[in-house]
Length: 569
Image (cartoon, rainbow, N blue to C red):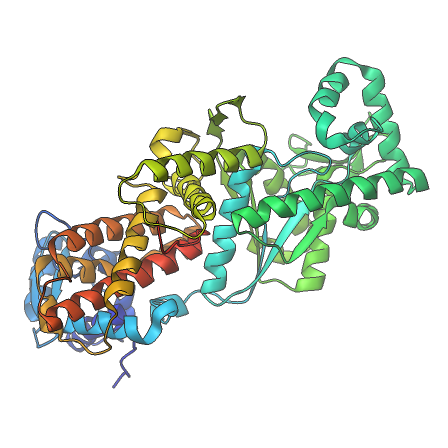
C-alpha cells in the first residue's frame, strides 16, 4: 500500500491512479503524469481531474484498437466510485473525476495550515524535477553606462527563474555578468570624463569620427596589455557603476551572489584560444581573424569569430572562458542565460563550440530569450534609464492611491506605491510568452481592475486587512464551505503544483501569473458574497480560513515572481 502523500492534489491523484492500477494491472506512477486538475469555470460546475486516454494510447500504456471513444467509455465504466472519488464519467478521449467536496475542502485547508509558506511545494509532482546547482546569469548591464531601461526585462525574468528554482529546492547562484571589457569600454574610457553622463554623446561621436573609434581601440589594447594608467581608470569606472546599479537592484528587490564580468576572464580567454588551436578547431582567415568553423560539412558556411586581426579577444571568446570557469568553480548541473532574443545565435554558437571542445555539460546550458518593450515613455519623453521608469511608476501609483476612496492609512505610502508600481511593471511583463514584444502603456498597467499587478496587490492587502480585523482559528467545520464560490477556490488551488511544474519546465512566468490572477478574481467574488462580519461565529471562522489560505498562496506566488506583497493599500 502506497503511503498517501500530504499534498492535497497528490492525495486525489494517487486515489484515482490506484483505481487505474487495479483495473489495468500497471503501477500507479504510470498514470500520475496523465492526470491533471481541470481549470475552473465560473459558468458551470466542472469536475476536478481528467485523465487523457489519448495520452495513454500514444505512450503505448494502452493498446490502441482504433476506437478512442469506445475505449474511453469502457475504461470509465470499469472504474469504481468511492467516498473520495464520487463521480467518474467519460468525455471525448478523456475520463473526468469529481472528488468529494468535504474531502476537497478538508485537504486544502489542512495543507494550508500545515505548510503555509511551503504550500504546494511538497507535491510528488515537483519531486520528479531535477535538483542540483543552477547558475542563472541575468541583468548583465554594461559598465560606464547608466542602467538602461532595456535591462529591466533581463533583471526581472532572471530574478523570477532564480526564485522559482530556489523555491523548488535547487541551490541557485545568481550571477551578474557585467559588460566591463571590450572596445566599447575603450571608447567610453577615452573621454577622460564622467562616462555615466556622456556615453550617448560618445557613441554618436564614435559612429561619425574614426579618430574616436581608433582611440577606443588603442585604449582597449592597453587594457588587454594591463597598462597601469588604463587599468586604474577602468577600476574607477567599474566601482562607480556597480555602486549605482546596486541602488537600482535594491529598489527592485533583486540581489546577486556573484558580480562577475568579462574582465575576469581575459587571461582565461587566451587559454581557450590556445586550447582551440591545440584541438585544431581555430582557423585563421585571409583577413587574419581567428574563427571556429561550425558548419556541418566543414565548408565555413557557418563560423564564429573569436579573435580580431590585431589578436584582441571578442565577447564570445570571453563567454567561452567564463562558462568553463563557472563549471570548474560551481560544478553546476545547469546554467541559464537570460538575454534578449537577438542574442539567440550567439548562444547557439557558444554551446556548439563548448561541445566541440568536449564539454558535454554544455547540453545542460540554456538561453532564455525575451522580446522588446515598445514605447516605454515618461512625461519627459522616451525612457533611457530604468530609474526614471521606477520613479514614474511610484509617482503615478502614489497619485492613484491618493485619489482612491478605498486607500487605507499607511506608515510609508511612498514605499507602498513603489512596491505596487513595481508589481504592475512585472505583471505586465510576465503576462504573455517572454519571447513576444509588447507595447508599454502606463494607464493599462496601473489599472486597479483587470489582470494587473495593482489588482493582485489590492486583493492580497484586502484579505490581510480582513484577517487582521477578525483573527482566525485553527479548527473549522469544512461542511460550512460547500457553497459554489468556496468550492471554485478549492478546485483552483488543486492546480497550484501543476502550475509550478509547468513553470519549472519551460521557465515561463505566464502560467503562475494567470493562476494568481484567476485566484484573485475568485477571491474578490467570494469576498463580496461571503461576508465574515455579521455571519455566525463558525461560518465566519470557516470563511476566514478560506481567505487566509488564498492570502498565503497569493503571497507565495508573488514572491516567486519577484513581487513584494503589501499588507496595506
